[in-house]
Image (cartoon, rainbow, N blue to C red; front, side, top):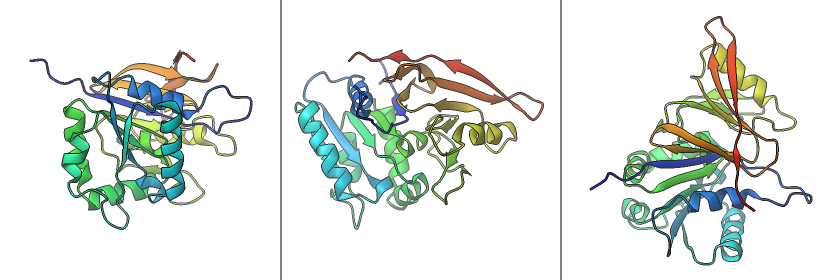
Length: 245
């Protein structure tokens, strides 16, 4: 019997404008399409990074009801206690695990308090698709820049490490020097080499290798960023495959 295919779809969400034809749900929909099951998909949403915000939960429920009514959506809340009696059993019964963005530092602290890291690794190894935006992208990697500690961007090095790279999300986010900070942290060794994504771009990994970048914004792209050996960085653009409308 073939081993399950380990897949992660990690993306930078985007601030949607009235002119945008696409939304973050198009990237979620791509992750759903990676699942082995074709019908009767089961998706568990983890809004830990926003403190299990009822607003975020309601919004996600509405989007699934409108866009993918064929999917059975559940929510794993960890505040003030787990919302399911058997976290491991519930997560292993899913086809896709979808992690919300927010504070990656708080996300990882709460997950570790509830012993989720080994469960999520088990899910990945069982062929359940792991996905998420922003903090929900960074968490699967080793490290990356974050504003979880304050307004400045600081190195975060406490990710799950399923993927042996750093991750720079929102690489073109207006008002924050994310592109420059990520490259400087890679150049000086504070972060390992890794992948950056501009808003509306995702990374599809099979195993621990990047299979492709996917996107929903024309002109947005991903980058491979590594130290160049002289205290600077080297980068290589990765042109995403635009997902169909």
